[in-house]
Image (cartoon, rainbow, N blue to C red; front, side, top):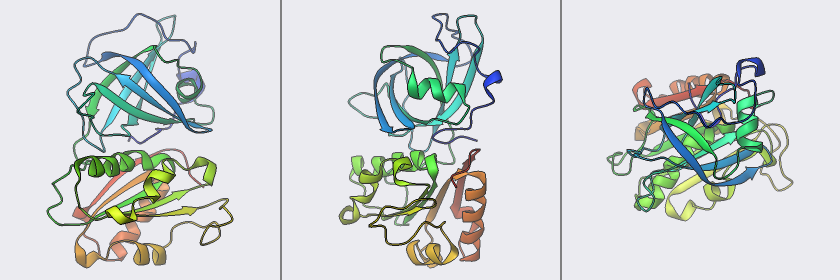
Length: 271
């Protein structure tokens, strides 16, 4: 499955040379994109802005496949969620936020080495179930549960809501190891007045002003900070497999309907 930084395969399955070749394939829906901007989100995560010719647009929650080609022609592709909705001013731009994975040659190259101006292949957008669009909630509130870099597609939903001036009530519960790992923290937590209510839990190290010591999200937390099942919220859960399974079980215990839970999972652990 996909998320902000889908688990890299072992280094020997990635390109043998961490260099992009200039020989790109154009089959099976792949497009040749260029990196037009990039910035560091955290010490281990970087956002890339890709200009993709002929891009059809995308929805918050969808993902793309990125493919690198080594000088010897060897290729490797990984899936990454888009971290921002389509921008009407730049409809061909795609934002992806990549979290470096320990031992992952592809994510390490994207975070540390891929220069602005470089080429990269893109395929997508992919996915139609784990998406949110302004004007589609029909009065139902939205609950976003994020584990680690799984916050990326959920941040795209928050950004889509704000860009459209949508008033659907959002609640965000974000579980992350420590402050230096937290993505989009200021953006997520500044919006209580505009209907985005976010709480952050740190599992390994919390800042001095944190309301509680490091701990995972528990059933009581979810019951207190999430939407009651009686309001019939749409629930989006994204993160490592263990996190997604735990949150899904808790939502069911709290009375949420299985049909209202949309889950996206990936490999690495957040704790």
